[in-house]
Length: 379
Ligand code: OSB
Ligand code: MG
Image (cartoon, rainbow, N blue to C red; front, top):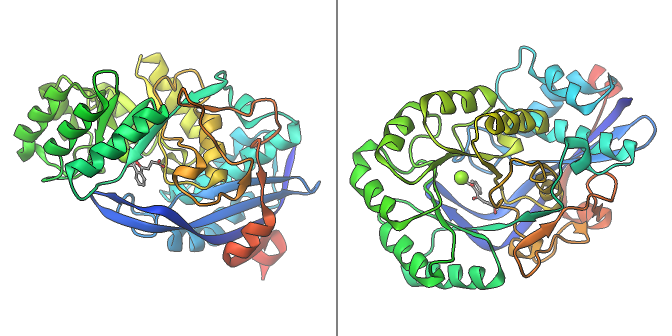
């Protein structure tokens, strides 16, 4: 039984080793909110809020999450007993629309706490079976095709099993052509447009369709499933939805309408791990493969992603690249690493997240800290 005594929110600043550019904006450094959930026994579980600095991926931002968690999320969970972390989702959803990333940050901390208290790995707690996760890299938009091709080749040589290339109009066909040539026929290449196209760009999409990509991620509007269905009917390449799938209901709509054939699951985007598992299960019933997306997480969010990606229908490589791809130094030990065959090991024999949070470093990196208890909420 979990009895949630306290939540501690911390905002840390973590500089990326290189700025990350997608069609809708550039992230030079991450502002990351960490959530520490503390049980009355003193046991601790960590979560991470993936809301961005700007609302260019989803309407949520870290500044809004810093208001939503104390005002709306915390009162629904503090001082409460939860027999199992799967019960947290219902408490957060009742008459509370949206704000999935705020909900997820807390829900995921409670999953980590539950696993810790049960002495089993988060992977086992979620029903994971995989011992290692095939890993992909997500490459941001670069200044020219030569630069992206060199990065893709280096990643392929390092063992990455999937090379995702961010595209936007004008930085698409030549970039993808250069990458496909650089990695050769055994490379698995995909494109992620982050909503940069409309059905007016059908010619570009049809040309893209000829490269044999493993999928094209979210080409059309961030909240659309109808236009994507029209586009999918015109393409051989599977469409993978990311932004549009904000919950199980949207995954159901995608399947019913044929808006895509693959789902990128990000626990933050869908409101947490319970909803992620529900989407995983639904997709499995319909033979729709899923994979775990990333949001440039620190080692804490990455631990959650690795655990989630260990479920059986996560059959495509996840964006769970090792710590060094993002950070000069991560905030967990050991840091996340990838072997030469492009796999990240699931720490399935360690309780909870399976990594230690470097508290001293988190304290040093924190620019704000807020403790929330049931008592503090009453004042
Ligand atoms: O669309 O998948 C995306 C990062 C920020 C916002 C959106 C996306 C991404 C990534 C990063 O692709 C993947 C990673 O964490 O390695
Ligand atoms: Mg994406």
